[in-house]
Length: 157
Image (cartoon, rainbow, N blue to C red):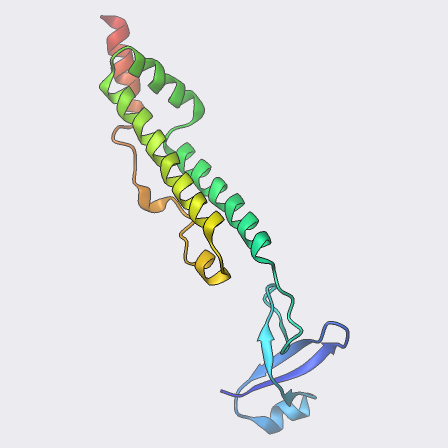
């Protein structure tokens, strides 16, 4: 596939792009065949002019996304008050409380393993290969509803 462009900003060398084999059509729009690349902002530029994001900035963005993803994932199942209940129940011998507490600790151990991988990444491609989501981690072994029922039963006895 042939790429045609028209430079729309002579300072940044950003382009509007046409892709196809109809050279007469693109020429009529003021476009010419030129080497282009996509910048970190998603726009096209003449080769060599595309803005780049430094590896350190990419890492910083990845760490922020990783934190948001894991915090949101935890709170989908166990919010701070639920975790407090789990810890209190576990301290009183509750198996469900201990299991939920262990799940949260394991989730954050997974977060820190990925965080270490982000910190250790030496190239953008290596960083891009790291899955920043927590979706594969799975749900806690018990629901908060089950924990509440266990706590209520323990209080009634």
